[in-house]
Amino acid sequence: MKITAEFGFEGAHQLAHLPEGHKCKRLHGHNWRMVVAVDGEPDERGFVMDYAELEAIVDPLVAQLDHRFLNEIDGLSCPTTEVMVGWFLDRIKPALPGKRVTVTLFETPRYSAEDSR
Image (cartoon, rainbow, N blue to C red; front, side):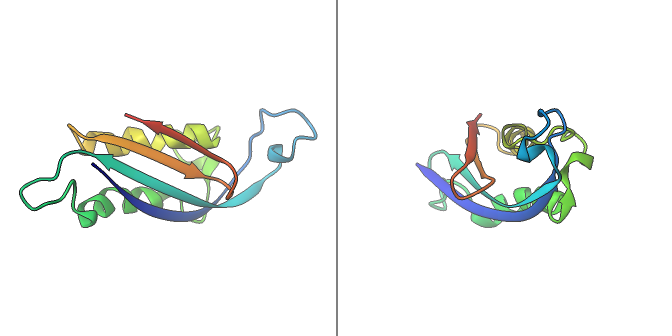
C-alpha cells in the first residue's frame, strides 16, 4: 500500500553551468510542488504511516528551502530538479527505515523528476 502527501515551496535557483543563452542559466524561480509517497503495510493502527509523522519529517526540510536562493543551500550548489530530489531523499529515507520512499518534485506543472529508495 502507498500513501502520499503533497508539499509546496517557492525558491529561486540558477544553473550557471548551462551554455550562454539557456533560459535556466539566469536567476529564476519556481513554485515547487513535491509529492512524497511511502510504501508499506498498515500497522496495528491501520496506517502505513501517520500523516502527522510524515509532515514532522518533511516540513522542516521544506522550510529550509522556502523563499531561498537554492544554490546557497548545503548540497544544492547545482540545484537541478534531479539533484533536489536526491537531496530530499537523502534526508527523508533515514527517518523511515523499512519503508520505500518516493519523491516526485515538480518545477512546473509539466516538468518533474522522481526517484525512490
